[in-house]
Length: 279
Image (cartoon, rainbow, N blue to C red; front, side, top):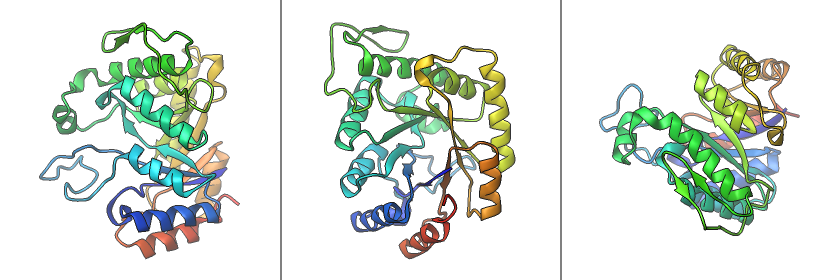
């Protein structure tokens, strides 16, 4: 089971110096992946569903990961998650390919359908069709990354007689990791994802795995995707016994989350304390 870290594009970790310190430390400690989240805007004043205070800083995930790519050489760079229906898929395909090339094929493109209606409204995306957009955008981006003559015609995006280079470093594009806890998310992971990103307790993830297995028995998984990798992110500190329980579930990647990101020294100590979990 590999070890990753999440969330260090927010709050006390956003400055260039702190990012450089923590990214280099994570790589030196043996962390295999560095994950960051996304919110373009959040409701103000804060609502119960809002994950952060509206005044808390959060860097754009792709801009942040490009900076981290230049500071590191081996650690994989993940988005957990980009809110896909809020993005233009043609532009995002170019951005993701560029980051994958510049990082030497280290991008893990985690995507989700989103859940904050005020954020969706602010960027002009109807909440009701976010799932359909997510599926279609994934298909359109894959076409741009992998087809010798890209063309796509859908309800929300269409193109023909165009091309985009450079192609991603990884053949077929970056590895797609799907987040979410719903039947639609499980179906998306099985039919379009190289991996699944689950959050919460061991019991939460066990429910996710059961849902993925039920879905896999109902729909066909494209052979090009290979085995579905499972990434788990507990919401808080993790001990060795809990890490073992995740490993016993078949988790491929355990991602720790150093909340509440208030002090860079505390984050560094958190990384050092958890570094032995996957060794």
